[in-house]
Image (cartoon, rainbow, N blue to C red; front, side, top):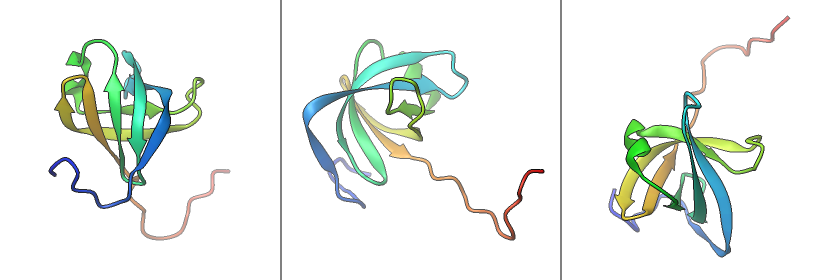
Length: 100
């Protein structure tokens, strides 16, 4: 996907919004700033090394306590700026399972 080629409209944030990236296994965390966001992905400015992003899949923590998050995959890297795509959980066929 080329930069700027969007499936969903992006919302550009007027003020820096601090967020974090965290490894799926919880072993690493990086501070970053959310630059813009859409229903399908986001653009972030990452602080520190980008080496941990080789994992290709991680969480975008939207709240300081981690209660609001999205699972992401890396789409592009441009210096300290990265593009991520949100991974949607696949819907299962059949009836919902209710735990007892």
